[in-house]
Length: 112
Length: 110
Image: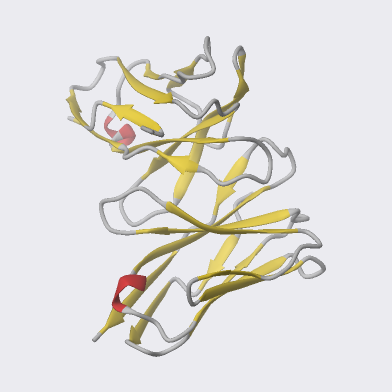
């Protein structure tokens, strides 16, 4: 059982470039979320989804887009990368309210 | 919106006990606890629900005081493997949004 799979694991971008971080889960979870974690900091919610076709903003949504066309996939798009977006990005899924979050291994993103 | 954790950091000797606190200014209906080792993803420890029982994971237990909107994580007879950063998390307001606290870094030394 793969759980939550994130790709790529590492990425270096130049300022202004765009890219998509991939997240897929095989647990049939309705709820999926994207978090960013800056060095020595907690996890901040970027965007989340409660099912296919339903997404909403979290605490720090600016500069990021998401879509949820299937239950399994929840990609995160950086529209025009900025150095302030250098961070570790975690995707998480859960079955529903009051259920544990399952995390992917993270994507370490550096923007020069 | 984020729950507030205290202390920010704890240094223990193996076998000592520690308490980590998590509080919110808004009503809590559930509190999750996670542990993150350096360079890894957070891992779920336990969840406490409003009106539910105190939970336990190995020698780690937690309580949830709904009236005070607080939860505490108790690490008893700490082991070296307990080192890491502990996060509480909860759904605040909109039940679909999940927020994490700022974390408590625990360092257990031999």
